[in-house]
Length: 81
Image (cartoon, rainbow, N blue to C red; front, top):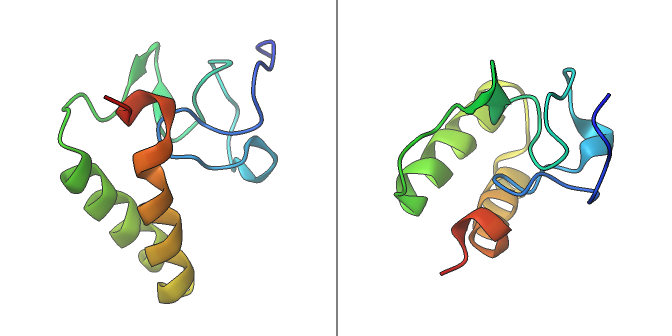
């Protein structure tokens, strides 16, 4: 397992404790980073937030919580300008 430098994904802000898979990176969750690369390669924050929101709702998350969680993505290190 990678050495943990933080407690959440630097791309989507998911807490590592809630990561459903096996992480390959000490910076990103198993959903954002697979096969040695980031899964979303673009740099459009709003598009990324929409993708995350839709997947959270599809996977059973409460819509209000999903809205809040995707709002918080803007504060992730990957998206800071």
